[in-house]
Length: 283
Image (cartoon, rainbow, N blue to C red):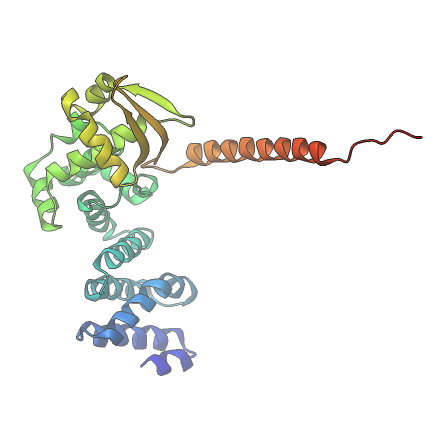
C-alpha cells in the first residue's frame, strides 16, 4: 500500500490508497503501525493541500489520521499530532465545523501538559461565541476564561460542558488548574518582575500559604521561569509563557530580539576597542 500510494499519479487514487493504508495500520498495534501513524501525522496536512480531491475525501483522511494517533507508542506526541489535525479540519468544512471546534476546545482544555493554543484565533472557534447551541457558547466562555487566567469565571460552567470534558478524560478542576497557571504567567512581563505573594494569591484565588506550591507547579510545567524570595515574600518572574501567541506577542518578541541584538553589537564594539594594539610612540 505504501508503494502503491507513492506511484499513484491520480489524486483520488492516492487519497483512497492512503485511507486504506491508515485503516490497515489502525487494525494493528506494532512498530510498523506506529511508524505509519507518525508519517501520516507529519504529511497529511500537505496531502489535503496538494491533492485536488473532494472535501469528503480530505475529511476521511484527517479522521483516519486522528484515530491512528491513538495507537502511537508515545501517547503524548500522538495526542499533540491529533490536535494539530483537528485544528486543520476547522478550516475545511462549514457543515460540521461547530462540532469539530467543540472537540478541539475540549481536547485542549483537558490536556494538562499544554498551555498554549491558537484556538481563539480560529474563525470556527470564534463562531462558538454567538452560536445558537448553548454548549458551544459555554465551551467558548470556558476557553476564554482559562486563557485569560480568570479562575473565578473558569469555575462556573454548564453540566453539559462538564460532561464533554469528562468524555475527553478531564474535568472542570483541571481547567481551573490551567487557568491558575496562566494567571501566574500573566503576572510576568517583558522584563524581570517581582510580584508580592499577596498579589499572586489574589490573581490565582488561593491562600497566601499556597503561593509557593503553585509557583513550583508553574515552573514544572514550563509556564514560567520564576524563583521564590521567601524573606521578601515575593515571586521573581524572569520569563513567562503566553497562552495566546498572536500579533501583539510577535511584536513584543521582535522588540526584545532587537534590543538583545543592539546590546550584543554594542558589546562587540567595546571588546574590539579593548583588543586594539596600543599606539607606539615614534622614537
